[in-house]
Image (cartoon, rainbow, N blue to C red; front, side, top):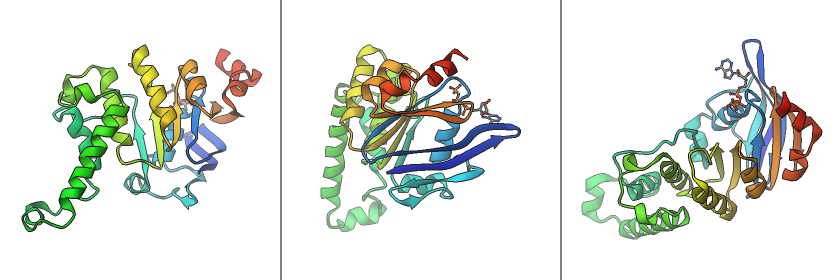
Length: 246
Ligand SMILES: Nc1ncnc2c1ncn2[C@@H]1O[C@H](COP(=O)(O)OP(=O)(O)OP(=O)(O)O)[C@@H](O)[C@H]1O
């Protein structure tokens, strides 16, 4: 379970987050909505460890991550995608995903290869199978040998998603995942997100997508949590509607 407890962040005089608290049960998909400047990006920065909150705690699976730097959170199973996809342009699609798995096994360099470290080939095989599985899931199999730099933005975003999913993260943060995707890619993304057993938090402006894939939604406005609950309930909440009308 992800627990956000009383998180506050101030930029100078501006309270970007004001005692925000909510929980997401394991394996659930939670949408984060709110008008511009609501604090959504700041919340993601706090969760991924890029920004230390002035107050409050973040727990994942009972473990307090509040003071843990980004690399430690990655080891705890947290993955994030960005509004601008971050992929290795000079690697093929398949190698991009393989690279995301490379800290599992492998290693040891040439010496270990020569000695034929037991289990090494089996692990290599497992990694390749996992790459194939994730590429298939994300609809990228036909593009597996294409260099990522040659892909249009929408497909690069799917590659970034495939990288994030590769080693079965405990928590996946998706920042506006549908931006740059066409209708077919958005539908594929929705199916992928729904099929995951991972806990997912996603910031998204496409309300149709949020309604379609999220189990719950939290709404922020001016740094405060103004509604939380089932998607339709939050969408129809008069306070949420008023916030969007500004
Ligand atoms: N580095 C910063 N320095 C000062 N103020 C900031 C900084 N980053 C964000 N803010 C302010 O904090 C508030 C929350 O911003 P944030 O980017 O988290 O909102 P958001 O919901 O992600 O908005 P958007 O949908 O436009 O991306 C806003 O008032 C914003 O102007």
